[in-house]
Length: 232
Image (tube, rainbow, N blue to C red; front, side):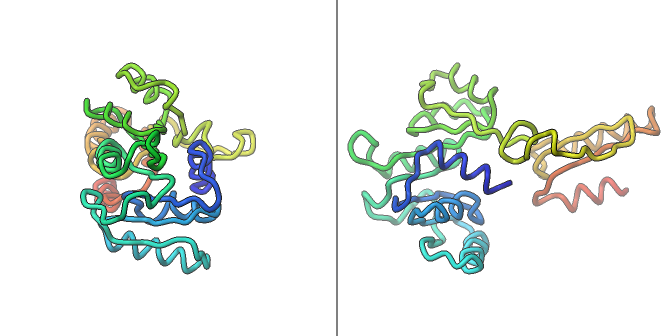
């Protein structure tokens, strides 16, 4: 599923075999590894040594020879000019820093691909500095267009559970049986997703509706804490 989503994003960016691909804040390689499988020469950078260790472990497991990981702060990319054909950067900060460090496409610089996950900050419009802006949903695309980002730059790559490359055709999926009434949330398990508020609210709901169920679907750094709260 991860591979399908990444391949769709790389297809939209037009990455070709043999091109040089820089992934800024690459994490464990969700986009870097698929890029290397497509034949690109990949450099994955991240400020976290643990992320780079995980990336390099996956590279060794697959026997990939065209991928390298380096611990590097995105605020200080120690790389020579004209080193890459395609640069991928997450959110506004990554796009701005990558654009400041590299010449625009029209002057021979690399293709800069920005990835927008949310539009809650006004500064998100600076993502328009990218040549291609990947939006994680149609509402994000509409908001970016309303903020003045050229529509020719905007492309939707869904990362939801329905209608995206993360799932096969819906008629092949067997729904999980749920007791009713149920509340289901699919999200990263961290505080900024509002999970604490949801758990607090559900305590009040359960007091009024004892047969209600809450299902939290996802993973993240605070999953263990949320599980402890749910068991309490």
